[in-house]
Length: 396
Image (cartoon, rainbow, N blue to C red; front, side, top):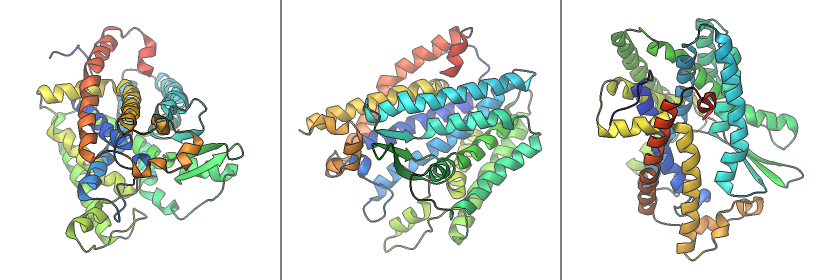
């Protein structure tokens, strides 16, 4: 197909589109596979290699999405001579994303009009990081790069600061660096704080600095050399640090009785919050992907580029569609469909822990989700391209 004329970088949209499609697999698993939310596919005692891989491959999505959000911010800002416009856009869009996370996205996850469960996930993290990046962009380029590296490399040294309880300071620390599930309003509401913002800020800052490789006039040959160096360098550093078990992730790997489970242990990284090794494991191959697919175009890449150009649109729609599929699935199983309306009490209960479908059903439904959403994404992409004068489209 022919794309509307644009200055967007196709390889970046391609990578983003691939991340969005893979992400949908993980979310479809949450609403269809045996155990639903209550099944942990990274638990070595209960997982299988295929189930672990189904989860592991989706680990790439959030780091890529946040990293490229930083890159897109740089490219968006390169259109203006003043950083003031970029700063204003980043702050207002970030504020908008936080609002969307706590309303539209939360309802998509739970279908609970009482919002008994408030989930802080990737959209909230991107929103807060954008608001902080709005100030960081005024720093000199080298200082900003150093800041991003310090955060990403050094944040695991804070792993041993552990808070407990639901007092304001503890909740603040959960929002900054420690994964936790806590409560407020005298226990009537649950806070699911899965995306502490500090490490994601480091990833977004580095993504912003990475945008320099794609600014207008930059030598493509030099860019590809750096993509190779950074990609292989990240993977080598990951393997070295992971094998040594010295630093970079709270969970260490161990030799298991079965080789496949030893491999699982080696690649079982901490996502909440994303450890240094988690970031290296996911972003290294992502950079090599950008190197490999910089000039490749075919029907498959074109389809992914379309989704990658409207990621927010795809994200919102896929959550609602997947949740509806989940409700239908419970009806097919002969269960009460209301069990997938995650109120506070249903979340604390374990009714769904022994319910669900086989993994092949998850994959089948995942493909169906992509088939349904693709033409909608294509239409919306064309609408955005033909209505660039509508300022509000840049927030969607």
